[in-house]
Length: 381
Image (cartoon, rainbow, N blue to C red):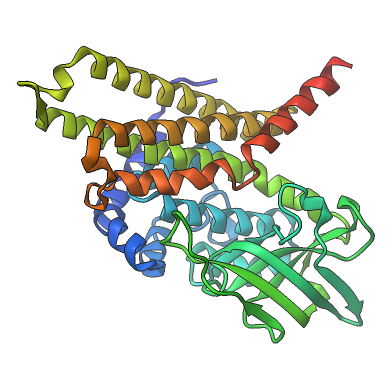
């Protein structure tokens, strides 16, 4: 296990950090206020290899590691956690095609996904199946060379503005063994979208319900065999959990940096805020927590790259710890700004709003605890 980055990793991180500072951060508040989905900027990021970070290079991917991805998403999130998180979701959906698709599927979709000429959404959650994802009810019935889809997905990032939907649907009986994964063109007749949800944060990416009403999708669009869709979905989430933890750390680091700059300029009782020992202790604790979470994230990412037996558990741990720490550090940074932290122009309250949902998506942090406890209990038997 490494505790220092090599030259290539530093270059990758710095490239993403520079892009975030130049192309994302100056616009983040406006995107949030106007609910603007910055597709053009994301395509610029894709031109740097960020549209297919861990996609194989024979289809235009960057063929980098999960460790590299953690560095990239943390760096991008210093500009805007919402934008970074959506690029993560796009990468996750694309990876599922790369890992489980056949040659025809991979070469049909992935070259344009890697450039983000095509953009993908990940569709698992349903109105009645969130944490209990294996209870999903969207049904795909075989009819010759097509499936006929009926049902609804909920809380789908990018829905209505993306091109492909990588959806988990029920092709068999109840439980995880009856789920398959199908890639669906967003313009398929019978596919429709709900209103853009009004949310606490994550306003720079649309979130909509996806409805299927007798939508006909070619059987050739199924990834792998029938019945392995839940396995595909969970494999995607291992990496997604690392990425969302990285986005939390990047947002929290930006909030801490804002607080440090504010404390240097703001005076109270005749002293700068950064001269008060109580506040010095607070920022020391915030930085320490961030560094601990970052180190844990790197360990989990390295374990996933090695395909260690405990990788899924470590990903769950890193997601739980990283998103909890990220939100708390951002919240404390707002507190250090006093009343100004509550004003949108300082950018801290946006980070707090954006990071709050990270404790819920990609599996709630309660589910992360369940994954970890089950693994521990199984190992003790």
